[in-house]
Image (cartoon, rainbow, N blue to C red; front, side):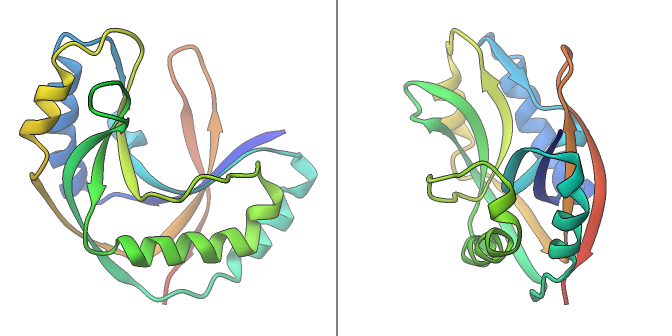
Length: 181
């Protein structure tokens, strides 16, 4: 079995700005597990555990993706499920969110059947930390970043990633990059 997801990687410039926020979250005194710099991304579709013999099929289907390049504006911060009971701290996508939803729908059509079923509505975001226990001052901190402009980025490819879970956190490996047209 191989644990897979499809994602959009971030530019170094955008990642650098997001890391500043992530570092403030990590040093806030709250009990959080920050996402490593190199693991920051936008998940388009989490597939979960897929049988090894289906990997080639998943890759071949994803190679047929036909989608136009577009830009995203990464702005603001928030928490799932709520600011008062945060479990996931995220950075949001403003402009380009509809295109990301359409990209998600197309990826779902091509490879969704290989993955775990996901009934939740797709909400484009970048996870920066997971709350393990006490949230402490997180609500106040996130509010300070609620309207922060992290910047723009072109979305010109999607990546099929393998995720290997380790005690120190996940290790991601790019298996396939599909360019958008």
